Image 1 (tube, rainbow, N blue to C red):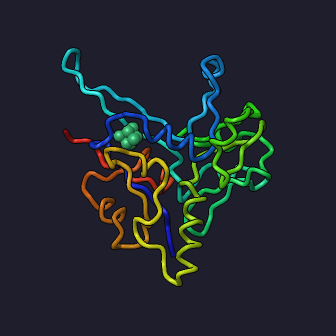
Image 2: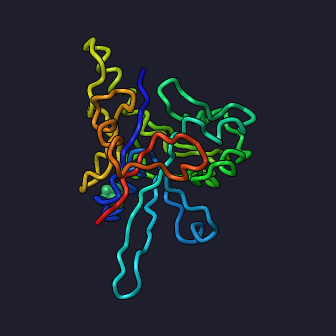
Length: 227
Ligand code: SF4
């Protein structure tokens, strides 16, 4: 069995934001503009959190990319009245947009605040519609959306592997954020494969989960910064 997971090395992250831009491009995420962002309606499936260490002028800034943690015990799943969010056999916390009725119970129950209510029906006037990824739907107003580890890329790789009568190889699937990171801070793979790179990195002493005390069993592992 596969359990898709991610390791993020906070020692490598420089906070450049390339992963955020890549995620927007890959997943047809709209940009809402300054005014709507000021109303708390900004939409980024991955965000870069900043933390400061020390006192001025000896301050160090640390960066922590945060997206849906694809929890093994996901607090968002049992509160959805229409089963629009559910757990896949491969450990993904999936979203069925066509089911969602926008109650936002899931977002209120997510301790990582990585679910976003879509307040808008985005428009992509010509020629901007050409930037859209045809493998990903364009969501309309009234539904929740969030990161699903670029599930369309996972399915593409699985289709190719099936045609070639083999398993998906370690490193064959790269999420948009992982692919675009110039520091190679984000590694994606199968946590159930003991020989995968994510499994090897996840065993390191610096490994941790966000809000471990909640026992959500995230599939995203962070490597603590130590510089
Ligand atoms: S692209 Fe890499 S280095 Fe840049 S903010 Fe994202 S994780 Fe950090």
